[in-house]
Every structure is written in structure tokens, then in C-alpha cells.
Image 1 (cartoon, rainbow, N blue to C red):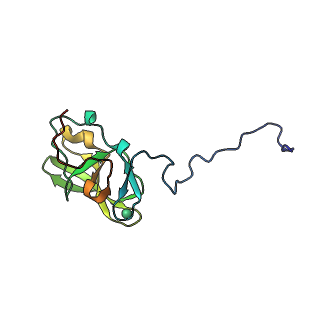
Image 2 (image 1 turned 180 degrees about the horizontal axis):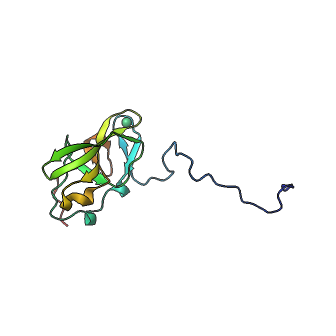
Image 3 (image 1 turned 90 degrees about the horizontal axis):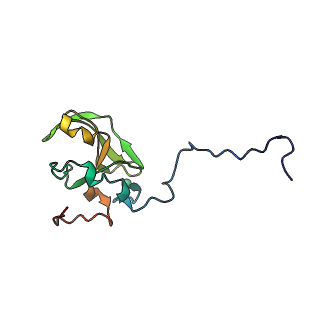
Length: 144
Ligand SMILES: [Zn+2]
């Protein structure tokens, strides 16, 4: 039986802005929180080398090697605060896992050094805090 009270056929509306309580179905090559295995980001969200100025030194988080990402999931951002780094002043938000509140890295909200502005709104994640079967975290020299 078709609906009798609607003269036009309407496709059911798809709720597009429903809050996603679980990660998108196909996050390719996910990187998860080491402590609780929650998906935090994906290798595909890692900032491509082409977006990184060649003269830029490799990133370090506060506790070790880190990488910049364009997207994160299931994280909580703290209120941004100023930090003075070797490459200039930044306004940073600490990133913690929504589920287990483990520290994961920080978001670069604002870079005050003009040459560093490409880092703005990127997520710097500590690789040591992520389950990263996909990222080669060895210190082998990568020839480009
Ligand atoms: Zn966690």
C-alpha cells in the first residue's frame, strides 16, 4: 500500500546532521588511542609532505615524535592558550581522548610567526600516544 495522504511522492528525508556517535563506516587506515583503542584519526588525514615546507624540521610533540593531521575524531580540545616554541609563538589547544582523556597532542589554533601559518588549524598528534600500525615510526631516513 502506498501512502494515501501525500499527493506527491517524497523520498524519505535523510538526517544529514545527526551527530555521529561512531566513526564513519570506512575510515581508511585508522589511528587509534593507544589507551582505549578509540579511533582518533586516519593516516589519510596526515598532512601530505607536499603541504609541508621543505625547510621545516620534523615535528616533535612534548613527548616525542609527532605528525600533523587535518582531521581528528573523538577528541576533546582544551581552551586555547599561548605557548612559546622554538619556531615562534602559538596558540594551542590540548587534544585529549574523549573516551579515556589521555593526552594525544595539540591543535595549532594560531601561529603568530608568518612562516608557520601553514600549521594553523592542524592537529599535531603524538605518535607515541597512538596505535599506529600504518605509520612507519622508525627513524630511517626517507629519501624524497
Ligand atoms: Zn583513549
